[in-house]
Length: 545
Image 1 (cartoon, rainbow, N blue to C red):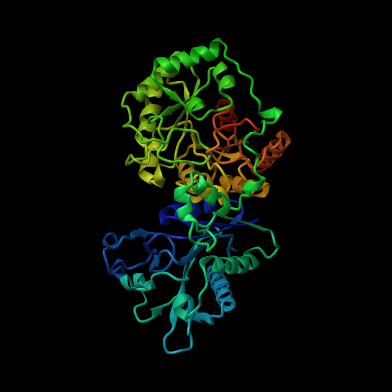
Image 2: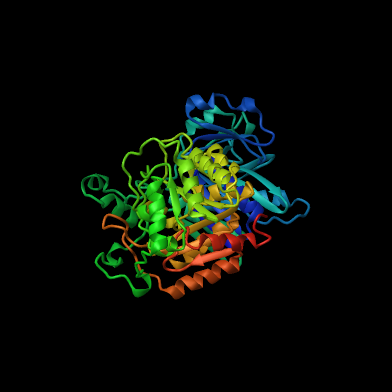
């Protein structure tokens, strides 16, 4: 299967980590298509002197990477495509792969009315090849190892061309650089993307076995997106605009006063075990996500002596459309909190502890230190207790994530939450590519990895299957799937109720993909049956591969 993903704007380091994971672990071929924030990248044999400015002064990153070629620039208005595909291990297979990428671009440009071709001794795609002033319109650099490719092409649609004056593009000082806009072609990024993807599919999926998913285009990228002033004035209108941009039919959503179907009605079970756990939580002045997020399984889990502790306070710096957690301005982290959590774990005699947290974008490390301290505190008091952490993305910062990874949780959970198309509506401060990258980096650190999605927010079944394939491709071991329940009228509407048999079908699909454990049912949440899922993963000898 050839899986095409439009990811929006993604930092270079995150895209590279995602490429590497798909290269090393993925079984399918992929095409990642995106834009980067301003960045200068140095190929394996680049001359540092070909960067003519201080990148920090002009607001760009500088990254050394493992592709071929010299220095290049990536930024807004440039369409970047990374084919991660199998390449035959035969003589001249790499030049043939580069030739194929060039042809995809040449065919794309021809459809847009631009005559382009190749220039002898200079990889990439050029215009005015036989004229007095050849100009590069698309840079190409690749890396092929173990019969699989990384990196790809950067096609200039309508970037700020002044950025190319700050480098010696591709190390070629005597030839110019151009763009579609510079050649007089008025085409949107989306129009160019659709044409390029069609030609890429013809080249890398000639059998027609492909699927495509797009992160919804940002507000302002579509002429019909507008209505920002209305969003500022009407409560909840911003959320409704994002949903409409993501293709959700709000008129078809489940009315807010609709009674839940019988399979989602949970009996109250407030026995001695429930009351005892609640008392321990209160005595230690702790917060649980079970209460803060209104989890439907609180009675079952607490009755069995299982709870998910929430650290770093109870106020989140993000405002996800599905979540009930408090979003007022957060208070400073409590330095005694890790030990209080460990004391509660000890008092409850837990063999398996789950720790999560609100997002803390106000902290330099995104809250990573709190996780590391809590893991270590539990280990000191309860050395035999297994610890699972459910983490935010820590703004994608590798150092912050490494701080959590180095503390050695038994399971590292980070939720994808929904399919690519709905990311901007469901969790506008997060990102599909970033979440996959967090999980890929956790797997590289040797951890058992876990992720989950909430269904019933407007996604299609084929999109769920595609998202599961992406999670498995970056090495995720455990996955959870559950029904979305609307916390209040101010939150995302329920698009539909999935029946138990639909969750069962998705469980089978996930198991066939190779997940060590799939927890899939209407009432499943991230920590539901977490201990059993971890045990299943631990019993799978391929989990840490």
